[in-house]
Length: 225
Ligand SMILES: *[C@@H]1O[C@H](CO)[C@@H](O)[C@H](O)[C@H]1NC(C)=O
Ligand SMILES: *[C@@H]1O[C@H](CO)[C@@H](O)[C@H](O)[C@H]1NC(C)=O
Ligand SMILES: *[C@@H]1O[C@H](CO)[C@@H](O)[C@H](O)[C@H]1NC(C)=O
Image (cartoon, rainbow, N blue to C red; front, top):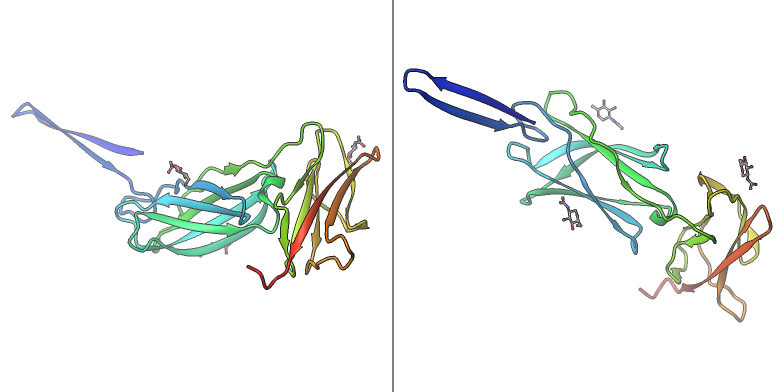
């Protein structure tokens, strides 16, 4: 938004155009919502946000950040975070997801708190889209090697109109977590290396018609980085 003032001095027949753009964050003239840019680091299961630090904004600022899942924006994270830009012209912030980001849409919005003034309006939601399944299930995380001792959420994404009725790990069913339309997940704590001869963990999704789909994963020893 720009405040443009036309200042005319009739006597001289001169017109001056003054333009001062309001700064995002903590400016003197009020605050506009931040405009974050989102990037997805799939290997780390994290979302990176960056947004410009405008003139007048302090080095460290408090932002209220919300993260939602699915197209209905079910909020799963809502915090005030104090973020420093340091010497940079950008603020950056990273969020680590428990669920692989491919499973479902994740959206972020934020607003800034300035000094004693009230919060800025919320930014628009910006979305990192999940994967859609066309004709068969998709299973995430997609890495073939997972780490021993980690807590892993596996999800199945079903084609439109198909319902997932079970997800198993090495044939053992786990409680299903409803993530969104056609998306279900399981949480496996403290992942162990299979003790049988074939050291593959199979993850299997089954739908209400009995159709199944599986992927195999290896588990690496936690002492190997
Ligand atoms: C947003 O981030 C991506 C990845 O870091 C970058 O390539 C892109 O130029 C950025 N866009 C804007 C508008 O800053
Ligand atoms: C963040 O701080 C503001 C102002 O102090 C407060 O109104 C708001 O409820 C806080 N939000 C959260 C998620 O704690
Ligand atoms: C899937 O589940 C929904 C909600 O429980 C139900 O309305 C729908 O009929 C089910 N679809 C199939 C193909 O079973």
